[in-house]
Image (cartoon, rainbow over all chains, first blue to last red; front, side):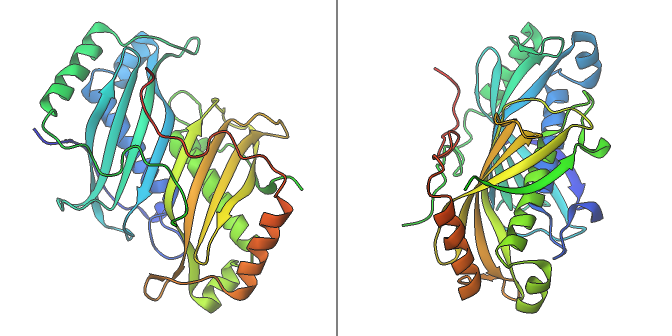
Length: 156
Length: 156
């Protein structure tokens, strides 16, 4: 099974800079909507969040910008689980123009399961944990993505 | 000389999620506006961009989310140059609630100087390069920030 197709959109007028290109922060907004869709997919949908008072918080995020994207372009996000523990999920999103393989941007993210009433970190419910492990098992043959675990530095 | 104060704002209604907290992508939008202000500061302001056809593109970005930020909160961004070469600047932004020392989020970024007509990477103009080195010299006594050069991974 390939990476999950978690989000599709066209690049909106509000998201482009003075050059008519998608601004850095709005690549992340698209990935953020993909994380919302991923939450729905594992049973942390908005109904569940209201009932349980639990959600995912982003702890850390790494983005690589590989190509410019213009206003109106149809894009999609694919999502791979890199790792899971009792309270955290380590995700990898890639942004693609339509169905092209080569990504235009990628993002590695660490998300923490939180009880909003604290807020404090809490283990995933049994159902969510089971769903995460199922997806991880389905994706076991996916290669480790190129832009994972990078340290940022000037070349040379 | 401390880090530059590059941007100040209040958290806008459009930037908060269903919890009333600043959404992950909008921390980056605030940092993105701080980068715009930094560009103004080094002589890559919008007039110059139009005249020269040059701008800065984000190549890579790393974010750490340290505290939640609520709607209406007054925040400010401080900016430190971590490194410079002929075409690149390695920046560190930190987001603070008003004048508090402890950041609520930080971002390490690698930016590339680009001729938009290509687009292709080009060296900084002499004036911009001089300004970057001046700021770097002014900040020489600032300690290396905590969240630099991190590799993302699950604990344990």
